[in-house]
Amino acid sequence: MSGTERTGTPSTRSPAGVPAPRGRGRVAGRFERADPVVRHCVRRLLVLLCLFPLLLVLAAATLRFTEPALPLAYGFVVLASTITVLYIAYTRYEDPSEGPSAARRGRVRDTDFPPLSSDPSVTFLLAVRDEVGGIEACVRSMVSSDCPRVRVIVIDDHSRDGTGEVLRRLRDELGITVIHLDENLGKKQALVTACSEVDTEVIAFTDSDCVLAPDALRRCVQALVSNPDLGAVSGHCRARNTSANLLTRVQDTWYEGQFRIAKAAEASFGSVSCVSGPLAVFRRDAVYNYLPAWADDRFLGAPFRFATDRQLTGYVLGQVWKGRALKTRYADSPFITAEDFPERPWQVGYVRSARVWTDVPAKLGPLLRQQVRWKKSFIRNLFFTGGFMWRRGVGPAALFYGHVLWVLAAPVLACVHLLWAPMHGAFSLTGLYLLGVLLKGFAWAIAYRMDHSGDPRWRYRPLMSLFSAVVLAWLLPYALLTVRRGVWSRGAA
Image 1: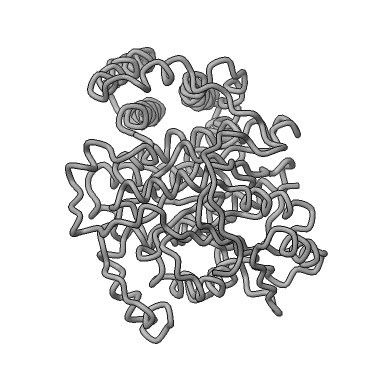
Image 2: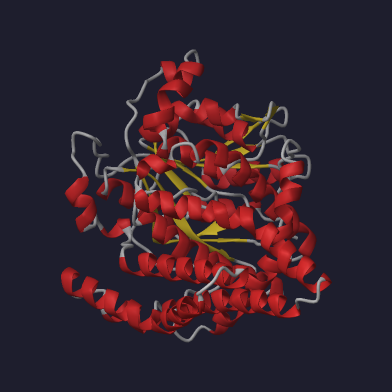
């Protein structure tokens, strides 16, 4: 095998240039070595105690909810959903890299999901374009992985800023494989071009603005080995440039909640809806046949050039219902003719212990552009994953469609509470809306505080909720109007 293959020992060190990990907290650390049954019962009790203040607020709102009123109805739904997601994330989620949960062992049959080998081969892929300033740190963190039998491949998507020269130097020094494209293909097509030669059991991806912990990839691979029903897993991402300014620190706390709570809740049902780009790890037999569909994805009659992590995840989640039609459409593709893998009811998980850091936008302009890209991907994926998620069960459907309704309602609610209400003198309505937003933010902040004892950054989380409601909510209509316009560009400046 060309490239570099390594064997290594477990490591918990953080890469240079990233924040040192904080302690897991008193609640998390005290019971991690207890009997599983006792730990589960105690965990539920502790979570209920921590959620008790929010339950009191919810009960008070219920008593006042005697007649239809938009503010009370909105506040009731938001608070109830927040409590539910927090409860699920903290009582049901178990890190799959530590072995299968009791629930998974009870529902998985070996005949449904052939196990990986105990030491599977891995291809670790990165597509990059014009990233001369940060690409070296990313590539070095990939090579520093302690996961055995890894081949690192970097695809230079026709860079013009010196990125190619940096990659040639790293190729000679580190033994990685570098593919230089003669024209700009876009991120998806660049990755799929490299995948055409991949025959390893596991395929992993990362982004060019990320740095990984040495054990991150190994933990994700171990999750796939220990849980044969997992077709894909996501790592846990935080901001790397938190020292830049207030905006990056606010985003960091938001990332923590989106992974630790939102993805953990979805993972407890095996239905993570987005295996995020900072660290996305797939079984080859769960995704290989669908790579041509991903590369050639079209929406509203135009090519959809964004990488769409959600869409690639959707091919794993929904292949029982969508897979055969997709493979028929691309029946002549080498990705199908080489080996036609059976469609299986794969689960998709999240590995909290697989840590990766990314450079988040440090200025408002790049942040808004990033959010618009994400909302376009959300819109596109809604028309795919939204067509089958209801089939995966009540829990996954409630989390997925509940999130969809929240995103779709956000601009409407912002318009009503921040424009219409002040124009009609209903300032109390605006105040109640903002207080509700802050209350939700404080609930997520408390969760951060529980997980990271002694870390003062929890106080930034309510600011992200406020920023999302006042600023980011307005981006969805713009993303919808410009959804056919797409250019692959990165950068967190």
